[in-house]
Image (cartoon, rainbow, N blue to C red; front, top):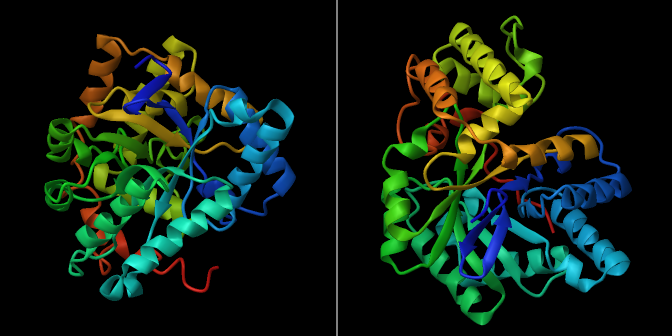
Length: 351
C-alpha cells in the first residue's frame, strides 16, 4: 500500500479515493451524458481510477461503461484496463423471500453488459431484511460466478458483525465491506473492525462528508428545518441529531476547519482524510460535481494527520453521543427515524 493505492486482494490494487456514482443516478438533477463521461475521465486523470456504482443507480453503470470505451478508443486498451469499477447488487426487499441462483446470475449478467466488460472487478452485496435468511445462499451463488470468472472479487454492503460472521463462516472469500463511516458515525469501529481484521476484509467508506454537511458551506449556518431538499440531506441530518445536535456539529466543523487550514485543505477534504486513517479502511467513496471537484478530492490521499490533529478531532467526537447499534442497524428499522426514509425496491420495473 502507498498513500494513494491499496491492495484490496492479491494483485488487485485500487485508488484510496473512489469516485462515487450515486450523484449520476438522476436524483441530484438532470445529467448531461457527454459531460458526465468527460467528468469520469477527468477523475481518472486526477488519480482517482476506481469507481463505485450499483445495479440500482439508474444509468450509472452505462455511463462508466461508456467512459471505459472512450478511454480505450482514445488512449488504448492498456490505459482503460487501469480502471477499477465496483458495483453493488441490491435485491429488492420484495424479492428476498424467493431469491434464486438465476436471479443473482441475471443481475451479474446485466452489470456485465452495462459496464462493457467480461468480468466485474468487485460485486458488493446488500440485503435489506435479516428476517429473510437466504443472504448466505445468495453469497454462495455469487461465489459460483466468481469461480466461473465473471466476478473477480466479492464484498458486502452494510452487513452487521453477526451476519458478516455467518457469511465468512460459510467460506465466502470476502475482500471488502462498503459501509458508512465518518467523524459523526464510528459504528464500524465497535465490533466489525476486529472481525474484519481477523479475516482480511477492508472497508470502503461512504458518508465521509455526510452528504455535504461536513463542508465549509455549513460552517456557522443556522440549523435547517425539515424537510430538506433531498433524501441524502435528510438522512445525514438525522445522523447529526444522533451525534449530539447542531451546536456540537458546529464545534466539529470549526475544529475540522482549523485542522484543515494547517494543511491547506477545506473541511470536506479533512473529514475524508480522517476516515482514511481509521483501522481497516482501504478507501473513501466521494462524489464529484465537476472536474475541479475531482481534483480537490484527489488531495484527500495526500493528507497526513499528526498527533495534534487527531487529538483535537477526537476531543470533539468524545463529546458526542455515539450512534447506537452496529453498522446499519438504525437504517434497517423500517419503522424508525432512519429506516422510514429508505427506498427498498429500487430495481422494480428496471431492465
